[in-house]
Length: 173
Image 1 (cartoon, helix red, strand yellow):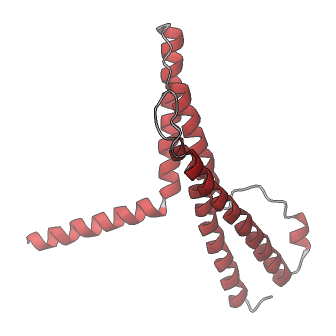
Image 2 (tube, helix red, strand yellow):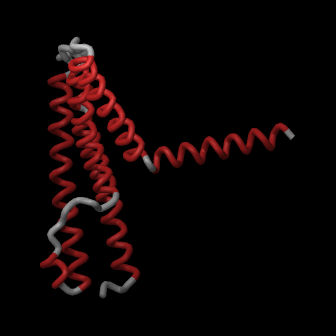
């Protein structure tokens, strides 16, 4: 009887883990947004209600916004929510449209790879610097750049794979 419950718990844990990894960007963005709102609310409350400003809420809000920007960009890439100008692409025949979409994604992947490399360089350069109010390593703030760009690359490669698969399924029409 106990083994059945253990198996059920393991399945539940595996399902939870799959959900968290499948919704990584959503979870991180929700947490960062909550941190951002809490930091700003705390800063405003202490400054204007208690007339005793705190040094850290503004800095925490700034760093949360930086992280939210890059992880949010990865989320937008995942959901294909970035703004695109597709007027000319819509005029192209199906097969050519797919190849243009693949080329655009490939160019974006190359640019994002440069951002990842430069982001890693920035993290290394800023790792020993410490923020004034929170006393955390600034490299932790800069990690958001290569992480967010790497996640965008993963999603774009997945979209390129789906486009290639669709091109193969419809015979390239």
